[in-house]
Image (cartoon, rainbow, N blue to C red):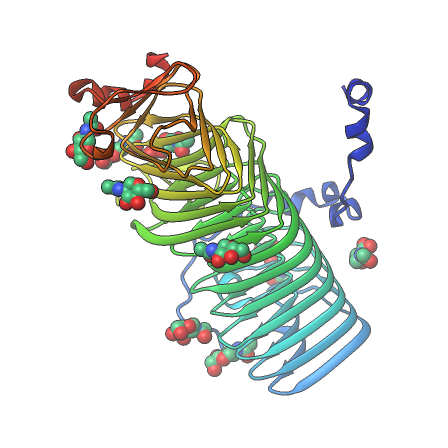
Length: 471
Ligand SMILES: *[C@@H]1O[C@H](CO)[C@@H](O)[C@H](O)[C@H]1NC(C)=O
Ligand SMILES: *[C@@H]1O[C@H](CO)[C@@H](O)[C@H](O)[C@H]1NC(C)=O
Ligand SMILES: *[C@@H]1O[C@H](CO)[C@@H](O)[C@H](O)[C@H]1NC(C)=O
Ligand SMILES: *[C@@H]1O[C@H](CO)[C@@H](O)[C@H](O)[C@H]1NC(C)=O
Ligand SMILES: *[C@@H]1O[C@H](CO)[C@@H](O)[C@H](O)[C@H]1NC(C)=O
Ligand SMILES: *[C@@H]1O[C@H](CO)[C@@H](O)[C@H](O)[C@H]1NC(C)=O
Ligand SMILES: *[C@@H]1O[C@H](CO)[C@@H](O)[C@H](O)[C@H]1NC(C)=O
Ligand SMILES: *[C@@H]1O[C@H](CO)[C@@H](O)[C@H](O)[C@H]1NC(C)=O
Ligand SMILES: *[C@@H]1O[C@H](CO)[C@@H](O)[C@H](O)[C@H]1NC(C)=O
């Protein structure tokens, strides 16, 4: 196969570039037992910050620094370095070696127990040229609390074991990472992650590779701002986002192996206001059923500017009556959360070419607008039940239809509809909503036409897999 593609595509072969990450140095196969550990969150919730956090090195309420040293910790629930309580630390040319388990994952998630480095309670730290290697499941760099700001520059981060996020901010903490190489092999170990009530992550010029289920490149709980990140999430999306969070990515090239390019949802009741903003960014999804963007039980806005969604499935966007559970490996339904609602997503596409379909399920809606020289080749259809699609085009954008399509709300700045290449298909619009079309049938380039939905047949056109039956 490789030899054949070399013969057929010599230019591509020459142009391909291999990007290394820490898993090229420490083989994850040696740490398979760690990576097989299933995180156990079936434990008591911790309601307040525990008074002591164990560490082999502590900087408490003062300013300190270190360089050219290796610090380590091997005990359970014990950090290598804790910087806390209005403290400040500068570390350069440092190695951190951490092993030992988290025996309480709530303590680990909410307070940074067992993290290799934990900066907490209005403290600041600057790390430059550091190597953090952890096993048995430990976060690498954790930031906790309002006014805690951690800078991580030129870092090499390797982990095995569960809940080993690379950069991990919670309790309003902030981390700013530059030139990071991060690998995590365990479950629920995202490369860059926030946690309740919010963490603020800024990451630039970095390479991220996460292998385990539940591990995304970015887990948005709070805000994610990324620029120039190349990543692979083998068993997760590029972005997980639970609730009203923001993920803002510029110049990123990210590949996802499970659920979707993004999986944006609410794990409680329906929430409104989640934002995804992709600029000059490419998402590739590997699974044969994975969409570029997946939304469930959330009202969200997505902005795609000069961006690409490359999907094996041919599905650009899914909006579903669904959510993602803590198992992080399937689209859940009513049985898992009987307070679910349909998703409502607005996707604004500018300066981008999109190929693929929009699929909504069970009351969900997708509003899809194309502006500023954008194009779309595809159709919109129901995966299950009654759904609703809005399609909007400006005069510089075009739609190439690949099947008959039913649109509830249709707007086109080019009232001649000459920017719709029908390929013989019919665009059914709702005449009650789209009064500007005056209920007329309008010929489209390519032999098809735009027609009002004929009352009774309308619902059946949009329900179920109407796309198939109409072809
Ligand atoms: C942070 O402050 C809280 C409240 O004062 C305290 O209980 C906790 O021990 C502090 N954290 C650390 C890591 O010192
Ligand atoms: C450390 O945690 C592991 C996993 O929970 C446990 O098997 C081991 O006994 C603990 N070690 C100590 C010294 O408590
Ligand atoms: C970081 O430390 C690990 C463990 O000691 C080592 O295997 C790895 O080569 C180091 N990485 C770099 C970039 O030096
Ligand atoms: C996080 O911010 C909220 C809102 O400002 C505040 O109520 C809360 O105490 C903060 N939490 C921490 C751990 O600083
Ligand atoms: C999206 O990102 C672009 C580029 O950084 C920025 O100009 C724009 O304001 C962002 N939009 C939103 C809604 O965040
Ligand atoms: C849609 O949600 C249902 C549960 O409501 C689930 O069974 C199905 O797998 C989901 N499909 C997609 C593509 O999200
Ligand atoms: C569809 O939505 C209804 C609520 O409107 C819910 O009862 C049902 O379980 C959902 N079915 C699927 C397959 O999502
Ligand atoms: C229809 O779509 C246009 C363009 O996106 C939007 O401005 C308008 O609010 C939508 N109307 C309805 C009734 O949803
Ligand atoms: C057309 O839109 C109106 C107003 O939203 C709605 O009541 C009606 O069911 C729609 N018709 C069809 C056939 O979907």
